[in-house]
Length: 210
Ligand code: HEC
Image 1 (cartoon, rainbow, N blue to C red):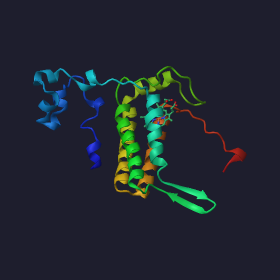
Image 2 (image 1 turned 120 degrees about the horizontal axis):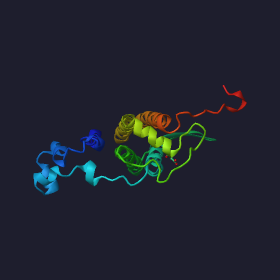
Image 3 (image 1 turned 30 degrees about the vertical axis):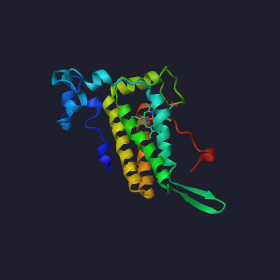
């Protein structure tokens, strides 16, 4: 599968509410009638963003149940284990092992669409700041609302890094997968620094640290 097939025609968040499904589906041309089975008049009344899409999980739950797990599935796929017998290079080898990484990868790239869906709560209930320098759910909500474009930009950057990882998986290229994993990590950290713990205090290493 070509990786660019995974990109949505246009992100839901960029489809203005006044644009109907007909315009949204334009790239599919003749498929509109087949997909809807209704008249073009009805089509314009339905905006996917306004009617059919409804965020359910909070951003926190998306992080916990999809994004973090999926990223681990990518990061843990290729590893060097240092044991008494020396260094063991771990990487997917069988078709099943590659399929497992691919599954995690698909979860991750699709979750980047979910992150951009407007109206999603930060937490299913308010939560306090987790550590010094971190923000509470109310502050995170305000920060995202004040700069939605940057938040969505990070989600899109996560998708691009995820697509790089997917290309590496499809090429069965462990070195490229590690590289893409590094890019992925930077995007996670970038968004967290901006919206979650902008004032984080990095503790000094024990013993003065060098
Ligand atoms: C578009 C912005 C954005 C990106 C990209 C992002 N996160 Fe998050 N993440 C957040 C926000 C905002 C929070 C704070 C809310 C919270 O505590 O869950 C968070 C919280 C978390 C949490 C804490 C969840 C909890 O229990 O409170 C984990 C774990 C996490 N992210 C993992 C990741 C990983 C791994 C990646 C990259 C693969 C990633 N995130 C990418 C925005 C992002």
